[in-house]
Length: 98
Image (cartoon, rainbow, N blue to C red; front, side, top):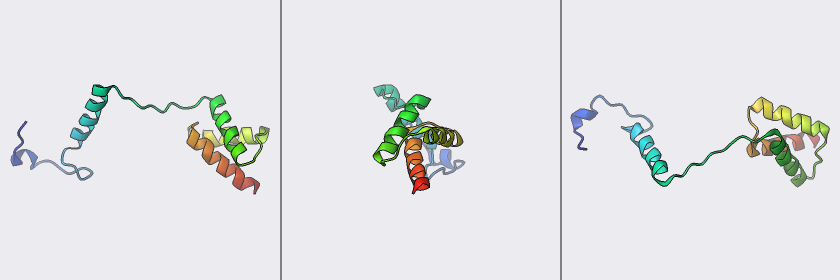
């Protein structure tokens, strides 16, 4: 659809784009067209603790009751149970023990 200069006089730039909604609509149309959706669902508590245990094993640390309780507390304070949080907990736990 043709666009005239007059149409853009009242527009403002957002993130260096004159029409940011166009970009969003194009992305949505691509996902609708090709049916691609990428979702990151939160881990269950058991899944999260399994990843924490694996992360601790790679750091030669033991998953004991203290580590388990602290891992759950760590995830709660961050509002998420994910692989990233499990990895961050591993680094945090290692720093406490060394």
